[in-house]
Length: 197
Image (cartoon, rainbow, N blue to C red; front, side, top):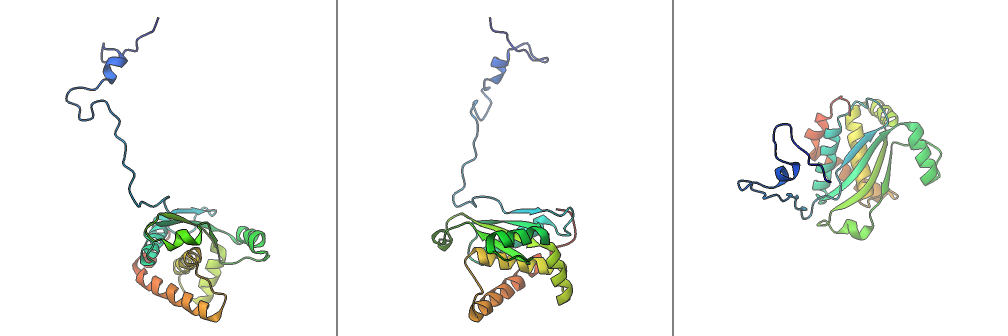
């Protein structure tokens, strides 16, 4: 024998209460969100191994989004990991066979054909930034720490999109593009204030 579930406020069974009413606009159906055409494949994510990196994740995400839009890739996404010298050194050793800390490492996960199509949603890859190195570089260059991190984010994004700096000419082109992007994103860079992620 099947027991009927009863509500404390109603004598009707649970089955009866789950039917749609005549006034209901959904008539008992479940509304599902329509998948957006050309929506990003994944949100931009920011993670940190430091408890308080002194940066706001929402501003970093805005920086990434703005840079990708200006680069003609509004549907692309990426992940940012803010870490320390020890972790970035391990990654550098494991993946580049270089046993030293560095400021930024990019790990492209998209194939070049996918990157070439700007109308296609795509997850570009991951960018690891050593906050220890970023702070040291900011002090040495006498510039604000958030601006240094913004520069490293933009630099990492350009690597994910296939840019490189192996030759002097590539280095000049990439540096010029970084400078243009940082100027265009000046308001976002200025908004990178100290707050917990």
